[in-house]
Length: 353
Length: 152
Image (cartoon, rainbow over all chains, first blue to last red; front, side, top):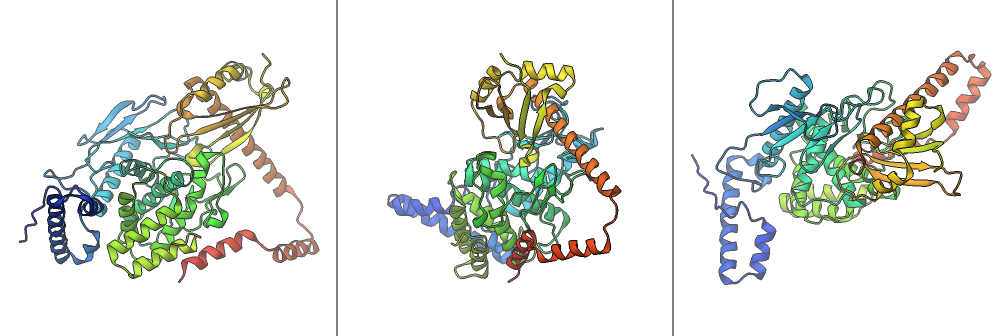
């Protein structure tokens, strides 16, 4: 049996910080950074030998003495606006009488599992943060949102929208939290659209993970179960075909572009954050198709690690595209198929890298 | 203060899917019409719109346009869910529901009329077909482009 001894520091200091210490630190600090890098490299090699198919994943984002377990709390909003409402079920409680509460409890557990198993992330903040959800928010509320501390779900108006408790929506909202705790992306214009896109990308990946679907098998739809039969549309958004998710005389036509040539300058929706997210969404879809297999194994790893490395809340699409190509290079090597396909995906949505 | 006669409402409801439409206040039930006059008073909407904004992802944003007989330009208010008071949100929810209902009614009526319409003559049908197939379909072209992108 191989024991890997973790250095307490290399789990905390990211590679770019070690590079900075090596460049700008004094002799003692440089030696420390080099030693940590060597140890991290040895640990990576040991892990690669133990599980070669997961070797590209690199150093886990967290490491602690206690096992990472979910800590969930589901509240009943009582159709009011106040949050979080009345606590109905917390971690370890038996199922509640409310089917909706149990569904949220189970689905948030699935999202927690996805981030932990596939990205080594312990909850929303990487530190085991309690996952708080409120259902029955306001009356006939047709929306779901992340308010910086928790997720909130409406029941829908029953005319256009059903309940917003849906795995892709939970994955979407929880990912807004992950983005927030990964450096954040300002909710305006292109950085806001990237925030929305990351939420969509991880939302659909979680559905694919739960259904064990490959990129080729998946629907690539966000909110597939959300519309009532009255609405002429498949879902809120489509990563495969942005702009074609719905076409309804009440909701209008899906306004999402799939290419920079059709970028929408908008005064509403924080500069069109829910509209222009179609462009990076489609780039991710193309990459996942090119790389094949399960989307979270390669394309998802590139997107996740890029999110951790970005540290630019005002990032533009071009900044993000650069970061994903750089990450593909770091994870899979210069000139790798993965790196080439990442560049190609961006080129095809009009963002050459 | 002049009474509100008409409201044009736009919401970014449903995770960014906007719903918009016009509401004639005189056509509303009396109780709701009175609440609209009281709750959506311009001074109050002014105060709400000036409150600090938050950046809560996916929260609903509202845009209200109130035409006025005393001003050439309508009054325009834009604010987010987190800025508004409960009674304002309640009224806006009811107005949104009425916009959706009215559009549904109109759609059903239009479909009913289409179903009851007489079948086109064979010559007429041929003409429609010819027109359909000779017109470039922007939507299909767009779709084709995307499918093309997806294959190496």
